[in-house]
Amino acid sequence: MNGVERTALVVGLSIVASGCGRKGPLIYPDMLVPAAPAAVTAQQSGSAVKLQFIIPDKNRAGRPIKDVAGVKISRRTTEVDQKDVCPSCMNDYRLFQTLYVEHLPANAQRYGNLVVVIDGDVSAGNTYSYSVLPFTAGNIDGASTQTAAVSVMAALPAPLLKIESLPTELKLQISSPFQISGTLLGYNLYRSVVAGAQSYQPLNREPVENREYVDSALDRSVKYRYSARALIKLKSGTVAESAASNEVEGMLKDDE
Image 1 (cartoon, rainbow, N blue to C red):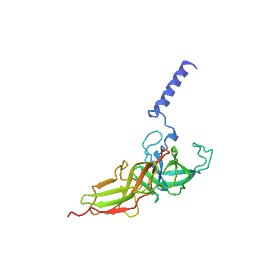
Image 2 (tube, rainbow, N blue to C red):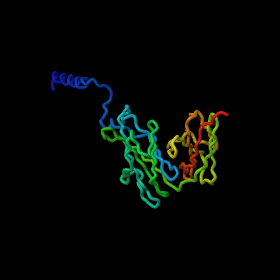
Image 3 (cartoon, rainbow, N blue to C red):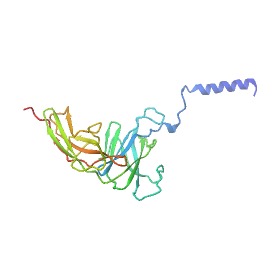
């Protein structure tokens, strides 16, 4: 190659490199799909499993994404006497449920980007592992989560709940009449305004350690319904919710 040819080659490469006007590193197509859902957990709640995850709002490259249409949840069942199970192998996972985030079924509820799913089709003695895969409106799959697993046991005994109506607040009293196997961490309280349709997300951010909880800043014309679950740390180190307490209801009391 002579000097003229070499100069022409350098100029040509410079034009190719700068002609597109793009800056920054090249992003491959597989990085433009939804990132894996975050904060995936599976916890026993009564005789069911409560699965939680956060819908991704970014792609794998870390850029905002808005077209996540839903998730595909896969589940693996490991029976109590089953041996030689590969924790990282996906061959035994089967599609459990396809959720569309704007049209959730009765066993799922959404709180912002947090989705809570109740899996009631479980049996004591088995271990259930879950993987969550997002997909776009164009039916393009994103990145799958790491698996979350929980070993299911017989439901823990439910606490008892009482309510007292006061002019400015509702006072809830919780008691556990049964001996609990494990360490009591506190209680989760659930509230709704529709009979028999409790929220899947606790009213409290942290476990209620006292046996009394005061709920205030309520609407005077609304009847509120509550239930409670004990939060138990088992000997295995895992944390489970008990069965739900009785449901109580109350309204703010008129001033006398």
